[in-house]
Length: 173
Length: 84
Length: 239
Image 1 (tube, one colour):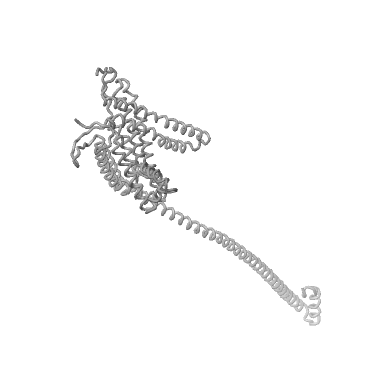
Image 2 (cartoon, each protein chain N blue to C red):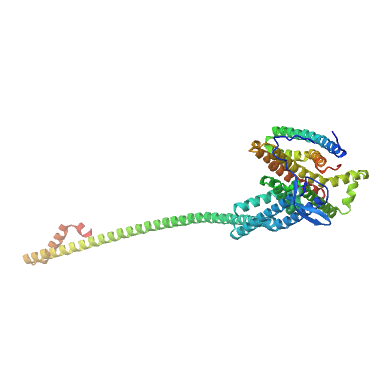
């Protein structure tokens, strides 16, 4: 009947070795083509991809750091600029303030002066009015006196007396 | 009882196979020593337990070989009957 | 001769290699055995797995998202490459495919005992060939890398050690093939004896533990040892 054996060193051993060799060759070729090479390729591709992404990330990081430094410098500048602007504004405001005060002072002086002049004018006017009045009163009196006596001498003395009565000081103030 | 020459040779082969299995002593002792040393190593350095275990198993598997040669000789004597 | 039959034995223990198909070649009457058929089945299964894996990888390459199967493949591949690199260093790349092939083949052969096949690696024809492949690869690498030095190194350090060196070289493939064969054979014999000679009530549950040791544990360790030793032998010739 069939073959029953455990181990033997004969042609049968070589036959089994032969079939196994065919198996191993097929397996080697098939698995290399189907399994090992694709998997290794995938791993290699992924390794390269990750390396590329890491390099890119490092690049991005460097860029971001540079940008950050730039912005920080800019921000510092900006605050300095703001300080300068504020300083300028304060200075301008101060100058304006003094200017306004000066102007106000000048204005006030002018107003006072004008007021003084007006007062003077008023005084003069009042004096003139008074003189006129006095003159008209004097004329009236004179007319009365003339009416009373046509003696000019008397008239003159009367005028003088009247004028004297009215007082020197009234004239000269 | 009538024993032919063939039967005698088979009987002697069976005895030889039994004697060949005495080779099992060596790997037994060797694997025991390896396991003992492995246990001692784990005791000294518990952190390296997995390394020690795998090295020990590998060494034991290699040390087992002589015993297996004894087994192969026994099997050849019993089944291949080279002297029959 | 009046041999008494032991009543506990249900039937004869069976751990033999059986012929399946007879054929003639070179004037010899040869058999295709059940281990050869088992090896073919395992080859077909491995190629099927490789085919499915290839499809999955192609699919994942299209949408860029690796599935669980591909993750497992990549982990296995990395483990294999690490193992090869640990021993062969920079030369690992050339041998990864071969080591991976024989690793998968031996592993599946060793584990096939769990699926009712007679483990093909428990047939000396199979392991002998694997050892021979190792021997050829080792000596090819030795010749390629050392040239004449490959032969003169047999006379190192003193010429009188030549026979020992020669035996050492020739014993390598025999020792690794016999190691694999004998380990698996011992498992097959123990399982065969247990299934063949024990009464039925100890065949429930208890063989599971034996399978765990003889097929799983021993099978995995011997697969690893075979691949490691193959790489160590190759590395010896790489310089």
